[in-house]
Picture 1 (cartoon, helix red, strand yellow):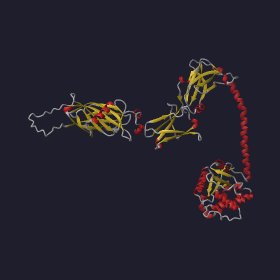
Picture 2 (spheres, rainbow, N blue to C red; picture 1 turned 90 degrees about the vertical axis):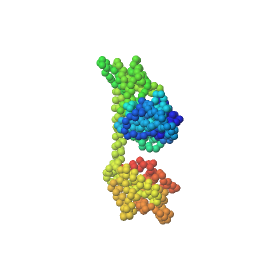
Picture 3 (cartoon, rainbow, N blue to C red; picture 1 turned 90 degrees about the horizontal axis):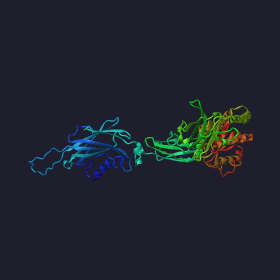
Length: 597
């Protein structure tokens, strides 16, 4: 209920005065405002349109929309219906023999008016306004005003159409403002449909890419597309990165929420990455046929961005350099005077012709881009002389290149053949072999986790991998040394290497094992890794292979970059001569070494 008063007058005048645009107010509830001799107004929901009230006629309806906003909360769409009412004159007359009982005050009876609205594909919804009429305060025209405010009307959306009517047959159609009209006003950030995420771009020169980021939360609800030029076709980005080579000065980005309708557009690379654009500009020429049997020279220019400049034909004698391509006068064309079209690759193309050009002279085309752009061309229609020279160069250079490649591949094949024969038979060269990965004698979770991570990486690369940490049950059943011997049998069958992971504790164990006069376990920590025996067993095998001069063929050392092995200087004598790799800084070299052959 809204009483008649100064506040009601102000709110009603505000509603009436906003005749253009979409008004924004801090009012956020349903209500009714009555003025001009109307009081005690209440607003009710009405299920059906009742019979017209003879006491009131609806003269005019003025429906409109506004944004109802509450401080620090989302704005919602409100339907405002201004109704002009005609109040029938009061026919009641006072009795002349009135007894003069002044204690009984006469109260005018309440009357009502019902107004309905209907959106597409929804049932009509009605609102009934009930009020008391003060006939003495009416104007001579017996007119009064009523305004209804309906917050979040059912079935009403931005851009939809609404039909408003009364029981008197008065009706009016109104169209809800579009998203663009609503979102062009403030405060956008409080309107869910108008919210646009903030898009941030970071140029990562190390990774040669542009990284896109959203400010705020719910990042999964946001989408981005990229386009060349402001009105170009926008292609959805599946990743939040853009290769640096594809970024051009005219590239624009659009971002929007999946559950919203408003987009934000920015072109953040203007004036940058011009070299990327010039590298993707191409010019071609061909022959065209005119309707009058004449010939014309077609030229096609494609570029990521639409260019401005001039195009002209020229004649380039075969015995001169391209700087001496003399212009054929009277044919200059402006790039901006023609229509650009975007092709399927997102490049802008322009195709035009030079008419009445003698193609027997092998005309060429030159392009000069406006500003600091380069001069393109000459690109010629046909150039038999230069084509013959190019063919001669290819005929001389191609055999030389083929000979060099053949020598390289044959040399590599011979080396692999010799290696295979040295290993007593032919094996499949370049095959992923078997890898036995042994842990150091450290009781350290981080070291164990790193060893398992290396084993997983090798397995994903196609190697057959056996990690001591993955075979604990077999070791308990067979024993450390027999288990290791069983793995060596797999190496002999499949080819491969035993990889020892080095840490400070591993080097200390190898150093003490080498010095036979010391007790191996005297200076070691009391708590050892369960794989310490396997590591010690591998040292015995390394010593045996060293006596045969082949320890470097069966064993390989890996040292993690993240685990320091100092202060020991150099490798123990037992491990010297075995290939050593850093991980992950020498990952590719490690993979290559482990590959059979």
